[in-house]
Length: 361
Image 1 (cartoon, rainbow, N blue to C red):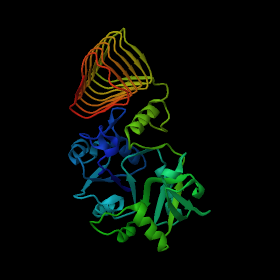
Image 2 (cartoon, rainbow, N blue to C red):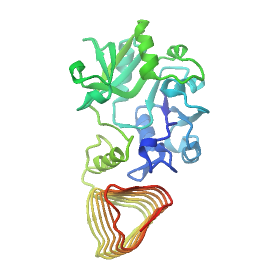
Image 3 (cartoon, one colour):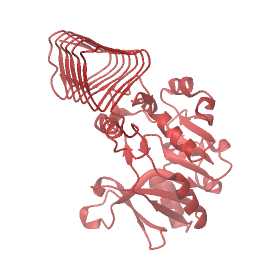
Image 4 (spheres, rainbow, N blue to C red):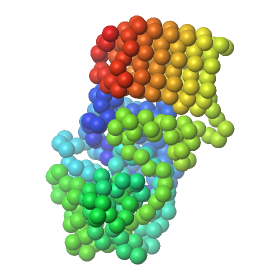
């Protein structure tokens, strides 16, 4: 099976996390988000994957290379201008000469792709769309089907009086290659608003695959935070910590004997945890980070090479790469971009989002 992953978005809603880091590369349990997606595709026998890239493409290429390290063959299709979801797939067409999977690159799911593919083939569908249930369908696009699962109508952001289902487009599709003929070349063209309605109007068979699998888009810092917490707490389907794991410590990390760690906590390689430090999970500590004596970290995500001084308090926050938190500083319910410095003794206002390179206090 072949697949194409749409990873060209700028991740504007995820800022400040994505100002210097592509959305596909934000760490989830200390691995790039996209690596989790590729792993799931590999489990379902996808052997050739095309990454539709544009914004901040080089870090993605540098990390993933030709894909051999991950058991797949990787191709890259560069968008020189925004092409929309379907347009980006059209731009990858030279790699897609057989039935293929297309998925949005900001979706984390343990969807059973193998079962979805089997259903697609049994129904002789041209397109199969994965559906997922949501609590508030009025903020999404709904998809109505008949009793056989064939798509009958698309309803974009309906009022409650129009809601007949809570199943929404999950951003994962199986397509037959001849569908590509309906997508104009080098044109901004979307699956949701243009291709699917066009095919429906022309009677092309589109089917739905409803699923209750874990599903979450990481479009905002709040959702990114929730994903890490879900995985650490065992709510992420087949992902996250193995059963019985509460604390995972990487190689060459030093944890002082007086430190108190209450899981779930993941500590990457080459970290230092000082005397009387308290970590209360869910907590993730990234590669090479240092936490000095008497600091307290509760329910937070710490990226790589973060230096946390003595007596620092961090709660419900995301601290990205190369930040420095001075002695006695307090950070709660905040998001810090790369290379942020918080002065000693300074209490950051709750809810703050600090852009990269800023010094506060």
